[in-house]
Image 1 (cartoon, rainbow, N blue to C red):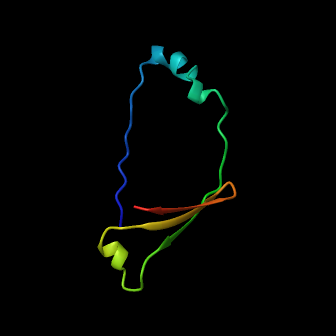
Image 2: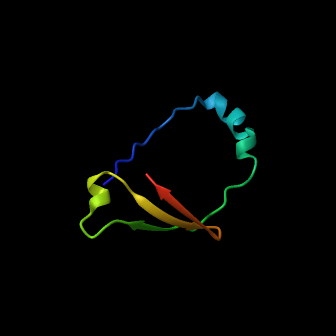
Image 3: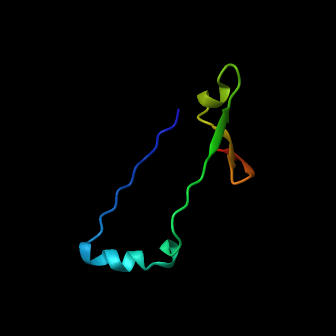
Length: 67
C-alpha cells in the first residue's frame, strides 16, 4: 500500500564528536512499544485512494493519523 523511502547520510569521521555533543542527543535513547492498528473498508476503498487511517498507542496515548 505505501512506499517508504530510506535516506542514508554520510558523516565525516572528524564530525562524529560534534554530532554526539548536539543537544538532541544529550539524553540516552529509550525504548517505546508502539501498537498500530490500520483501518479500511471491506472493499478497500481507502487503499484504492492511497489513504491510510492508523490508530497508534504509545506511552498511554492514542493517536489517530490519516495519511
